[in-house]
Length: 355
Image 1 (cartoon, rainbow, N blue to C red):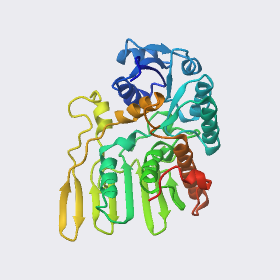
Image 2: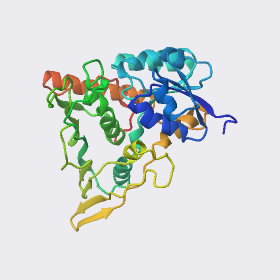
Image 3: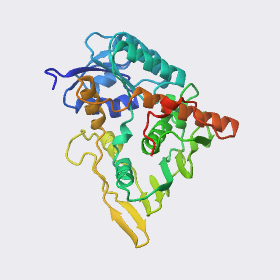
């Protein structure tokens, strides 16, 4: 290992920065949370009194003390801040969604290559217990050939909240908030779809941006359904997967977000454990399958190793570009009422291994 920890500048201390990034970085050996870019120093110091706060985000991403910059600011600032950090010679992690469009994603990818710096996107839910269990079942061949995959992130939030994700502006709304998680997991499992068909809607009284999204990925005969909504009080499973050998259902979601909100330190006793078993159905009936433990720290462990030349980038810019194309295809499909093929070259489509 490197003799000294990598110094990390976290820029943005809203929900993502406070709830996910700061605790995960602080709990990852070999990383040191050195400074935080935020306009609310009191909020930061209430949690982390020993961390320096810089009010200007541009100054934070270019600060000479930082080896790695983590950008957890509103979506429309991701590209300009990442551009400044890469140009200053920093390694960079960007929260999802990577950028607002695929053009910016390709530009940042090229910039990182020119400067020889790591550029990665924070897809922490690749290390959730529910997804890991589905991936394990598919990898082991338990399901046979998967014909139907359904992934839900449903919440019950009937009141529109005063936060930028629910206000009018670029990169806001449920598809840009939760869609990157749903789509990234599907791409990891099955690759880039042949076509995307989507319906996106505003359902809550007073909502000004989309708060419901239903997106279909077509892969030959296989179908993957991705769904997110804010008026689901219950009754939907996190995952439902049907294959030629049986069906797998995961009732509840991974608990790491709930643990972080409750103040559990990543890596503490019980961290990432999931007592909600999978339900397996086949011709013999049904049975319970234990869920593996999740650990979103593994993302930052992999980033650390990649910066030090000891491992691979856990979420590559090429994967982020492919994901952006799929997110854009869903928006275009919803607006135009037709199936859309993601606008990617053959090489770009290969960023995810296709099954």
